[in-house]
Amino acid sequence: MTGRNKMAIGIIFLTLLALTLGRAEKVKPAPATGMSWDDLVRLYGEWREFQKPRFADGVPDYSAAAMKLQAQGLKDFQKRLAAMDYRTWPVPRQIDHHLLRAEMNGLDFDLRVLRPWARDPCFYAVVTDSEPDVPAREGPEIPSVLEIWKYQFPLSEKALPEFRAKLRAIPRVLDQAKKNLTEDAGDLWFLGIGVKKTESVILANLAKRLTDIPSSLIAEIERAKVAVDEFRGWLETKQATMKRPSGIGVENFDWYMKNVHLVPYTWAEQKATIEREWERSMAALALERHRNRKLPELMLPATVDELRTRTNEAIDVFMKFMRDEEIFTVPDYLRLDPFRGRNLQPAAARDFFTQIEYRDSLPMKCHSIHWLEKQRMAQDPHPSPIRSAPLLYNIWDSRSEGLATAWEELMMQAGLFDKRPRARELIYILVAMRCARAMGDLMMHSNEFTLDEAVKYAVDRTPNGWLRPDGDTVWTDMRIYLHQPGYGTSYVVGKVHIDRLMADRARQWGDKFTVKRFMDEFFASGVIPVSLIRWEMTGLDDEIKRLMR
Image (tube, helix red, strand yellow):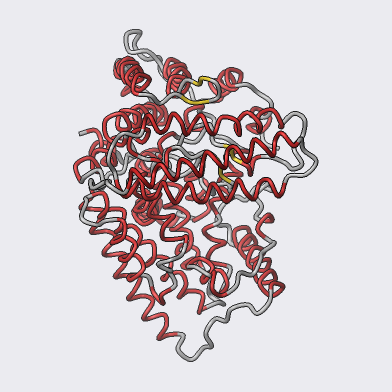
């Protein structure tokens, strides 16, 4: 267990704050009028409490009156942050200031543009049964969601009251949602209908899996399901007459990338990057298939045992490669063991990622670096409190999704697939598919594509017909991208951004460059935008200057 682990376990926030301040590097005191990094950390703690909605009877308040009060309070926080003379601080502490500024800009953007509480039914999620593979749930949602995956079953006496309280709140949450949802955004409302259908199934299945519990809890589950079904019907009635597009427009997209996600690429620049990456991946796939033309095609597993054998072997190969080839320092706590058990889906149910996984499990084990990152964040948090918790408003997206996407191709270039030439084809298919999805993100937000057109584009541009137009994958992805602008592009743009950072560091270090040294530095910066990691690692400030213009 590391020193940071000992610091993190069993410590409340204020104690953590005191310890981490002691670990942080020494800085020259800022002028009294400009305040110090310690003041920034205290402001951060206040901000995180302010940003949370107020609760009444288990229901978060997103009423028009509550949002008006939050908008007024935000101005004070932004004023206090702007008063800090942070430019005299060392770069790592300046970065913390930029992160807090980005979070405040995220709330500002929500209040002015996204307004999910008023225009996006997906925001009112009430139950989910799966853990995200990224630092936090993709896209905006209320903080009272019943996250079933967090609970051990049968429920303990300690867990039961919280579980029951969240169930009981569901009808009241949806009653408030009907009052708050007043804005026309047809595609978002259509997607919200699909979310409620899924939630209804989750609640129906929940009652079946619970045993040895009071009958009153089963009744609570049924009441929650009835409320979800009734809310879905309300959405269907309202959505039938909606005509307005759901995209935020190019100008707003550019502001959001620059001021919230700290991505130094405009809508137009991201579009050009994605088009070029799709062309590159398709050309590389054609050449790879030519190279492998005399080899047998990858075969689907015939039995569940065969699939599990392949999956287990891929996990072992991946983790061994990380250690033996000195890709990065691998602490003992990093594991992919929870993914060893796999079920074999029937052919009719197989969507894009199943098509990849069943042919060779190794490419998706590369993408599973997501789970290793989550373990790292939990076991060895960054010493700065501002970087130790997931950033709000998905500000981590291009760093997290960009790394997982980059990792597939980076590891291929590092030699992981040298003995699996056909699997190299899968890497390029993954890149092409993510480019096809990303274009839907961009074009929906420029209001040049409807939701249906974005789905069709992604399906048509994905090789082999593996992305099913009637499958959950493409519809879930487009839902995320429409209510979280830039998430679809973050996979590809984040990957290209990391390529640039590696090129910069390789040029600076010359013959002293090693992948392990680079990746250990990269991980040490935390899960923050690549523009800030690049500044911290290389000293190059051209991107942050562009973002501040």
